[in-house]
Image (cartoon, rainbow over all chains, first blue to last red; front, side):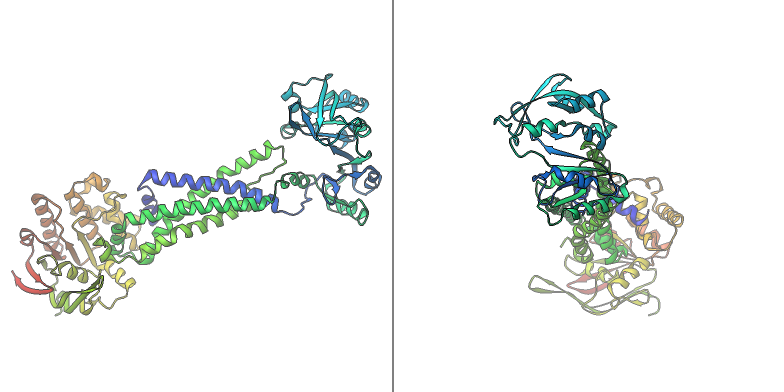
Length: 385
Length: 228
C-alpha cells in the first residue's frame, strides 16, 4: 500500500456518497468545458485565420443595408475572387414559423458557395425564373415541398409594393450540402433578388451584406482592411469580417454571451463548492478518531493535512477530468449539429483552464477540513472531545 | 538509572475544561525498567490514561520531565515527537481503532509508510507481525469481518510492526470477553517475555493486571503503592 492507495481507499468509505459527489463534479466540469469553450469563442477577437470567405456589412449594424453600387469597388480589391450579396427576407411560413430565407443573385450564390450542391438545370432555372426560389434539403423535407410547386411565404420585414406581406415563389430547386456538415446547414432557402428588389416596397438596390470569396485565404486580413478603408468616412462605412465571426454575431444579439456564461459558471462552481466542501467536511467529522490514530502512529500534522487535501483533490481530479472528457466529444457534436456556426471546441485552452479550476477547487473544498484535521489534538480527539 | 525505559520525574499535568483548571497529576514520579510489564490501575479520573499519554508522547506535562528510552520527550516539538512515536512506541487501545477501509494487513502496514522500507520489505514485516499475533489467515479481511479479539490482535500487530521498544496499552481488554481477554493478555505477556518489549498497560480489571510483572495504583493523580 502507498499513501496514494490509502487516500483512494478512504474515498471508498461511503461509496454512494462518493459516487454522487463525483457525479456532481462531472456534471459541473461538463458544463464548464462546454461553456468555457463558448466563452473563448465569444471573447475572441476577429479571427481571419483560414477564412475563405469574408462578409462585409454596414459598420453600425448588419440590420442596416448597403447600396449595390459598392459591388464594383469591392470586386476590384486585389485578392477578391467572387462577390455576392444577400438581403435578409425575414420569411414566415403559415401561422408564424420563422424561416431563414435570403434574397440573392442566383449565379453569384453558386459561385461563392460551391458547397451548396444542386443540378445545373436547377441553378439555371433559379437564375431564369423571376419568382424562383430554392430550398435546402432539410427545409424542403420538413414541409414536404416539391420542385415545381408554389410556396407562399410572408415577410415580416418587406411588404410588396401593394402593401401585401404575402409573397409567392416558385420552387425551382432543392440543394444539398457537399458533405455531412454542410448538409446540416440546408435548413434555409434563397429567393431571386431581381424579383424581390423590384417588388418590395422599400428602397431598391440595397444589399444586407456582401459575401466575398477570397482568391487566397492568406490575404483575408489584408482584403478586409482594404475594403473597410475604401469606404471610410463615406455614408456607407463598412465592417468586414470572417464569415465565422459574422455568424457568431447572430448569437451575440442575445446579449453579452461571455458575461452570461461567466455568471452561469460562477453559479455552478459556487454550488459545487458547497456540495463537495460539505462532503469533505462531513467525511473528516466522521473519522476524527481515525485521524487521531494516524497522528498517534507518527504521521505529522502536515501528513494528515496532506491526506485530507489529497482526498479532496482526488475527487476533484477524477470528476473534473471525466467531465472535461465527456465535454470534448459533446463540443464536437454541437459544432456539427449547428453546421459549424457555433464551433464549441473543448480544446487545449479549455483543458488548461479546467486544470487550473480543478486545482483551485481542490484547495477551496479541502483546505478548511484539512486544517481542522491537522490541528486535531490526539488526546482530545481520542477522548471524543 | 541507566536501565529505566520510562522515567517520569515530578510531573504535573492540568487541563482547562471550560472555565475550570483541572489538576490531574500532582508531582508524580515513576520509573519503569526496560523489559518490564507494568499495570496501571486506579479509579476513573485518577490520571492513569493521562500518565499513559505522557509516556507515549501523545501529550506533554504541564511541568516535570518525561524520559523514555533515554530520550527526554517532554521537550520535543510536535513534529519531532511524531517521529519519535513512530520509531519507539506501539499503541494498543480499548476499541482497537483500526481503519475500517483497510484490510488487516493494510492496517498493520500503515505505520511502515513512515519508514523507508520497500514494498517487499513492508510486506515481509507485516507477514511476521501477523504471524506473531496468530492472524496470518485473516490478513485480507477488513475489520468488520473480524471478531473483537481478532481486531485487537490486528491492532497489536500494528503496534509491533515497526519493532518499538515500548508498548502502551490503554484498557486493551476492556471491550472483550474473559476468554478472549486472557488470550490477548497472554499475547502481551509473550511479547514482553520473549520479545523483550516493555509494556505499560492501563486497566480496571484486576485479573488483567495479574498478567503484568507489577501493578501501580494511582489515586487523585498520585502513585499510591507498588505491588509485585
